[in-house]
Image 1 (tube, rainbow, N blue to C red):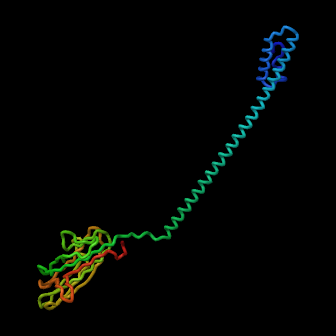
Image 2: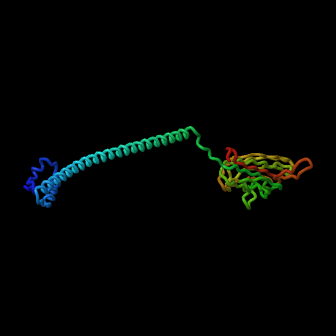
Image 3: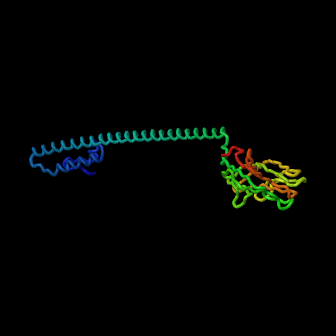
Length: 281
């Protein structure tokens, strides 16, 4: 077993008053340094021994201070770690509380919106108001009896989205989908003394509209008659409607008359068209 020079102490003996291996090694180094001084007189030896013992005491004090500082540092470090951990836990809880509050607010807003949708009526589709008015200032005749002819118009009075489909003078076209009201007034006349039958009806996109006709009987020379009727028609953009007519006698006509001193002129036909039946815009 190793011994310490000069003092002839084993490490087991040193361990009886030193606390750990590091203190033992420092103690051995101190006495090794003391051995190198080689005192030559008893006084020198005594002085060297005292100095060595003082250094040993200093070393032991330093070791003890280092131990206390290390323990204090460990305690401080642990306290700081605990404090940081507590702050992190508090921050995490705050974030979680904020998420919960935000989620609850979003759910409340969504619930309010859903309840509002349930109470509010569905939005009504709004369409542009479309209208037009057309008339003809000439007298119109049939070239053959019991044959369909389109009534023509030579004047557009007012028009917004409803127009004569160029180059046609009989096709009334719309530019917006909707339910349209076609209203017609026709001035019917006959130039013979017999009885004439006149037929009037509507045609959409070149096809007769079912159950849209009317028949007028006129009798006697210059027996004028004003016939008015109307029809609701569902229209798509680009659809057109025509007013058709036929007569069983060539003397029947759609007559126009010039203005008089007390009354304006009389067109042979007037047609008004509008789609504001449902209050569309």
